[in-house]
Image 1 (cartoon, rainbow, N blue to C red):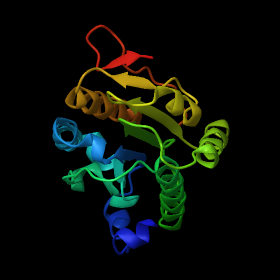
Image 2: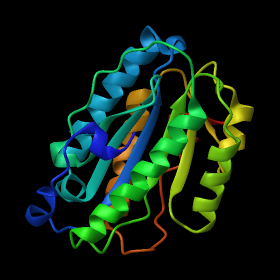
Image 3: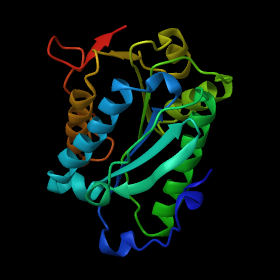
Length: 226
């Protein structure tokens, strides 16, 4: 599914906002195992992400968020700058086609980069892709893993994987170049505050500058190193 399938794209955001873009695609597991408190806390975390980004005047116009879910694999929210981002309410059901979700997200990023160039946005930060899951893939992830590694090697994106309780961390190591992180309990709010702060820091930096990020595995952090 392409961004064009999610909603009509007319480029009207670009004349009104020529700022460099910092894209972040969220790939969110909405399979049946996420039902209950997991999906409730994930939804609350998305609300926090929207609020935190919109409270930051730089991030609000430079950070662009997209939301891809599985199941089904679909674009719930096409890329939109944070000032217009409305957190969706997700529901849990079905299996875990992680490989297909990753592949669809990479296609979405390719489309978005083309849209930037076509509309005169020549500067954009390396996109972030943030995968959150509590299970194991129910499809083959080898092609997706190879695509992620190729994109990382060419510095086309930064891919992060987070495992919620029940996640198969070994499978996340297959798809992520970086060490996957294990969410501490249901600390979704803390995760999304960290993500907002990190994206805001990147959005203020110079292009290709390496910026220091708060360690999420610190004793008071939202993650546990696995």
